[in-house]
Image 1 (cartoon, chains in turn green, blue):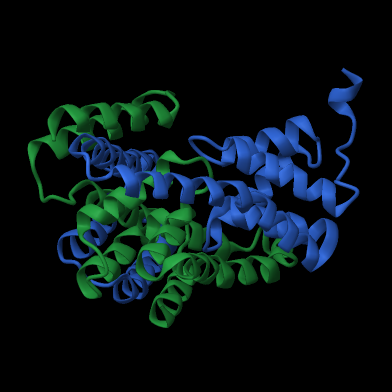
Image 2 (image 1 turned 45 degrees about the vertical axis):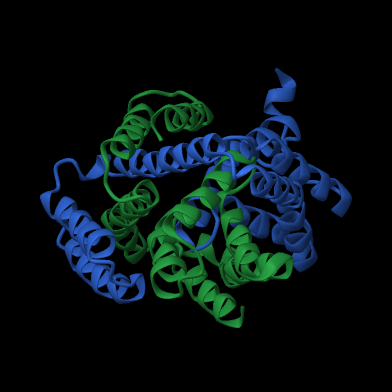
Length: 169
Length: 185
């Protein structure tokens, strides 16, 4: 559990864009490196966090809970939110002064392709818990297309994924 | 109309702050951000729309959950450190209860193959939502082949190669920084 807390605290500080950016790394740690759960279980926990109301950062609490019970859940959520919150707290005060700084704009543009690559990776590892098959590709592809091309509430996309999952798996 | 132009009034007590963030968390089906905007800008009129957009931009730029950061930054602005804690706790309280309730419920029913199939489908669709979001974010890159190449390399190394983010991020940030300075991304 200490290992989990330490690792989530590190992830916290690089999670620009929130959970999606660190999703591939979190899955790699929890599934590949530590073997705390299977890729299928990981995707299911993520599904629960997505389907419940609230920030998707709550998936960290579910992972901690799976690994070390309720205390593990609280520790994992705290470890993931804490360092970033402290950073937000300290920077919140001085942000206005550097609003027009040129380095800030360069940094923001540099971040775009990187976070795009990270977020697509997160989507990929979540969508392939059972390897690459046509069913998963269909569900993930259709969801991505609907979100990209329409203004439909994402909850309907998740519901559609549930229906397709029921029919196809 | 006069109400529309009235200056925003920040919360006057920690209780009001807590209840406001509690109601954001309580209603945040399908994403927190739309509700954060609705409660703080439209319903309770704590903050002006432009001000909210600016705070949000900061919080998207910082690591950590975006709306979680918003609660920390605004809590600090209005009530200092205690405000940050109260706002963050209010935001997380109810969603935390619900996500555990749902997880326990799922643990009871996961032996039914149908339930497992539905939840797996939802998870895969959630992965698809990530991919769709990334493509939306990638729109400014449409005419920037270097940006697309950098994004694709990140994907190849992380998703297919399974290399740790901590190894990829410094390298990618360095490349991105030089590309951005030359106007390539």
